Image (cartoon, rainbow, N blue to C red; front, side):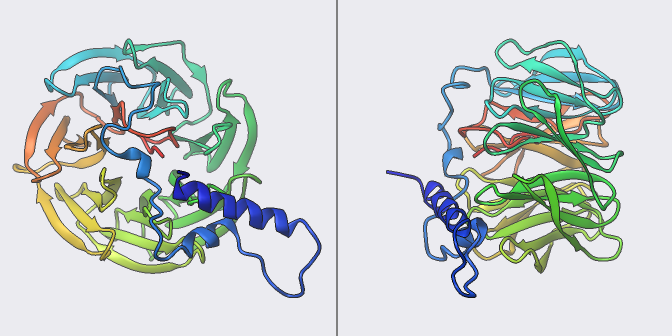
Length: 373
């Protein structure tokens, strides 16, 4: 049986095909993402392949590890998910920011922001390879078809499209905002939204034409961070560190539709393995808020005992543990997703940032610390 995602994507391609023919009066043809947004009562779930146990053959026999980039020391610390112990540590470049799974799940890329390179890690051995020169790789994503790597060149105010295999530049796009850093794709993959931290904007970027097609200005003083689309493909959630909550943007109209207060310093966004809950890390107060996708309201707030600075991370393959870096506390947190209990607090380097939990369920990676579909 074909997945609902494939049905929507096919509808989008049909609409695109029709639009290339002769005009049909004044009827405006539906875009792929409008088609996705209108399947109101359908079982569409963009994360249906992220269920526990649905590991790709490419990663099925890999050791369960957590890869923690230390932005201060220039190291990557490797933790064993079962024992919570450190099993490796190696040098990379200057100010590594995120560890990003490649589209085909065969490589983990360390984004060395200040030394302008990407360091490949073999997830089978946990060993680094030869650095690849890349301008200002603060963060990294992949187009849904796997053709291009998308580099968030934050300080250069650029989004660079590169060949996903050779990393050669295909197109550099100067953006009308400052601090582009996090992103997520629409249901059909025809566009993605990018948060601009320092100007308080959200950009809409056409995936195929590789150009900016819209800008939304959030509240005065806003500092948007992580971006995540809802399972039904209708709503983008944007964490805002300055406004202390999460903005909602309609995927079809590209308009803000509301704001959900979560806690001070809202930063990272993670979808539960059952697609029911959005975990929001509130870095400024040491809490994690849980938003129900059904009600679009906060249902629980977990507080780290003794405080902390929960930042970026991911969820274990079985969905039972939420792993987060403690950005300003030199630690990593392992949190039970069933109770919110802090299972373990693990000391690491002084600047833990965008850690990657690997392997994870899913067919391919869209980037960041592990956005799989």
